[in-house]
Length: 315
Image 1 (tube, rainbow, N blue to C red):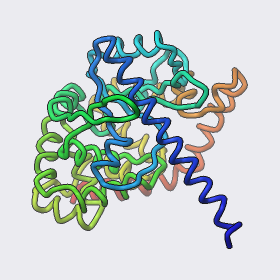
Image 2 (cartoon, rainbow, N blue to C red):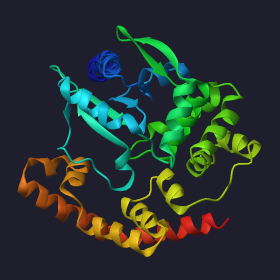
Image 3 (spheres, rainbow, N blue to C red):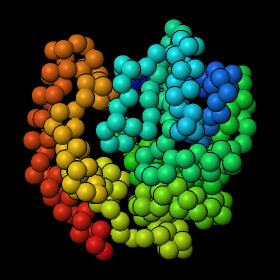
């Protein structure tokens, strides 16, 4: 019994130590940006864990900067020895446009995700203004970082649950936030969502959970919404999400441009989403083949998911 439990205990200790290293990396990155005259807010990580009053493990550092300062922030990181995960080209497809990942200098492989926005937010400038205005200082990793206030924490927990990627933890974070954050945090979060054009994503996340349904009804959040948001929150196939994003773009020109990027995605985007594409020309070619094969295999399921999302979207 002891022998069987030992690996999981060792893994938990290792993750906890890694989180401590990430806290120090967050403080160092914030200091690097501050010296370059760039303000930043720690979006999740230790700040979210303390707001939720939970032992929450995390895998990277997420820092938000003003969209207008994104270029200066990247230059400051590069000058300080940070290395981008991919080349000089910033991915521009789907939600990938709002962040860029950097390796922190040092012996450990630690990642700092530099954000100029957040998934589900259509007005990133307003998001930055709202989160920065309410940000509060927190001692972390031998330094001081800014973290969102309770309203900002509530908003981010919902937005992350609305765009969870491959992970189930965002829904658990939202459930915890609904349980422990004060009741007045949610109306305040809804007001910020309205200001930064994120109400559809905020609403679909709140309708995901029983406790969220109660809050959503009290706030009169829309039950229906764009299929893209519903599909993303319910972790539908990437093919269904891609089709929904294509159909929701305004105008045929934008749809055709987006379709062209889907059929022939940039090398930078492929390297961003598929680590094997970073191994050279052959890896890039195989990434193209895997992408086409994956979409082809899941097309029928994706069409069913899209039909369901549209039916729900019509109420």
